[in-house]
Image 1 (cartoon, rainbow, N blue to C red):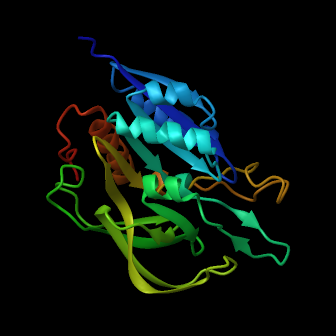
Image 2: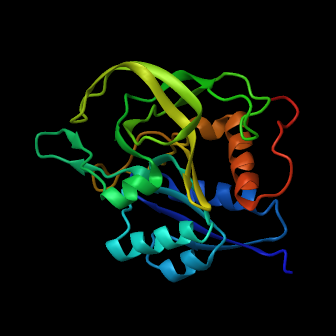
Length: 254
């Protein structure tokens, strides 16, 4: 039996430094000699995605078509593992009045992912709390702080939350701007028969050219959680979860 593991990485979309995220994720995947990776900017090569063992997505405002969503559903039904990152669950529309709208995802995609992005306050420092310290993905981790976009969204029932943060406040200029204080998932699992989705909302990054056509050049680079060793620990654990190999206990120091 072959030990080869086929991974399809979707890295694409708007308003983020996709080049940076893609290279970082490929570097982490290269730590596993049995992994073979195909890369695309969207879900258009759905037959290759369906044939893969693992799907990893780092996107913003990249929405699969109805046919591609059907392929993603088949991928999960055959036992595929989908490690979804940051803006995978986002739809972004800039309105003429300056506000930012996040219209509904298709019901099937929302059900697969288990959440939809609706808003975030300006990049800020906030505490991530361990919700379930017994799960291998979070075992040995302690509460930690990050500086990142604090993702707020619509959450589907049935998720197994592993990490969360607590926040309330105003998120203007997003259309859904007022958020009462509540817990918000940061890392969660969602079962789909033999398949599973693991969603990690952290990981914003942006370079000087990534807000075109909204502005010619962004004034500075943003790396957010990519500057945090614990974020890389979570990414490594997510990859090990997806390939189903190796202990997921904490790296020394965590």
